[in-house]
Length: 448
Ligand SMILES: [Zn+2]
Image (cartoon, rainbow, N blue to C red):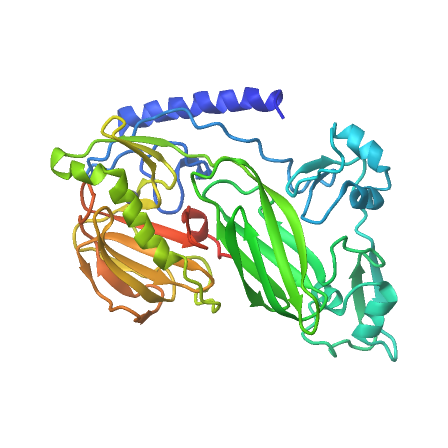
């Protein structure tokens, strides 16, 4: 895990520090909504302060970063999934478990974590069997013949229904005759990304061999709430930006219709996010707002709203930018107010906006709250379903009413400078499963 990685990390840090110094001295480059400079995902680069803003951004080395596993397209690098053991991998790789343990220097071959990188001597067998549909073939018959489930064949062949097999059609049957290693009624469980970072969104996809009457779960002590998407059950949950990197328990319980409840337990490794550091000074007039209790009370007010759950997904595609302008400050930046008076992190992104700029809904949604908060000022919270919420803060004016249904791009308010703000701008947050996460990724791609 060290070696060449640490050399490149050192090099990267030096480079970032250098970039930071250059930006601080020139103030020239600007970060457009499309992406930071160089198109990288790395938010550690300090953003140049906007000339209209008094926010001071200080360059510092990035926090310690846990190395990411090997390239996802490398067939000799396997990222373990929940339910996999060294023995199921051994069976698919054609090598003994002891050989895999030795090659990967595993001290405890019985403890395989979801998201762990395993180097393989040869690619895993995908074991794909092609079957030409003949007279009398049915989905249930084929499933029984190859030891898989009907849903499995449907998914692998994008069949629209259970009776959609066409005579002469070639059907792909993967892992024919291979047990999934999960207890009944679980068919597969996928946690994505395999090693989530602080501030990212985790999706947990569950497929079952039978229709379920209920499914619940828990990740790192937070409830997983599932919504049905086609044949699968999908839960979304955010990783808190301040959650310590480490290994956390994952539990999923499923109740089949007319059946007995069954549970699986796994572990998910959480890695450190890549965040910057900002030193901010706010005036004596507003300094009472640095009271940690004010912060805490406000976070509780917000959590009461963003922890709600409605199973219907209202959003479509990536989120829209609420304002088309420049990014002043990124999510997750550790913030030091007035030289250590309050140490916190930035729970959203800041976008430049003159007073009175129309602020638009990032997606279809319902107005879940209209609040006037000490720190965030006038705030609109939209509920987009499946535990996804967006927040628009420091507004001068609301343009919607509570419980109103809004469409993406509809004006919901006007930007301002209310609350603990150092100048007019829009503070925009995304919350998933009751946790504030980095919205940038989801302004470019759709949430799963
Ligand atoms: Zn902000």
